[in-house]
Amino acid sequence: EDAATSGFRLVLLVGDMPYYGRFGFVPVPAGQIAMPGPVAPHRLLARELVEGALAGYRGQVATA
Image 1 (cartoon, helix red, strand yellow):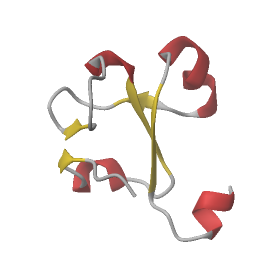
Image 2 (image 1 turned 90 degrees about the vertical axis):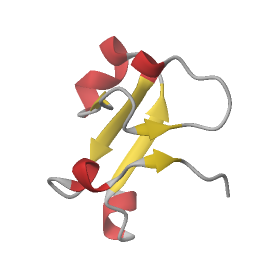
Image 3 (image 1 turned 45 degrees about the horizontal axis):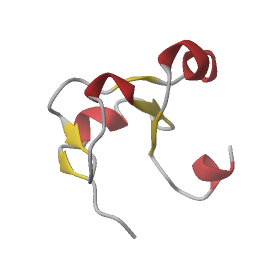
C-alpha cells in the first residue's frame, strides 16, 4: 500500500509463488524482465499496483 501511494506501478521480487501468491504476486512471463545476477526465472514475481503495469515493462532491471 505504501508503494502504491508513493506512485509506484509495480513491485518485483524474487521468491516462492506458493507463499507470495497469496499477496497478489504472479510470475513474470519468461524473458520479459531480467534481474541482475543469477535468478531462477520461475522465482521472479510481480504485483501490479496499477492494472496492466506489468505489460509495460521489459528488459534488464537496474540496481539502485
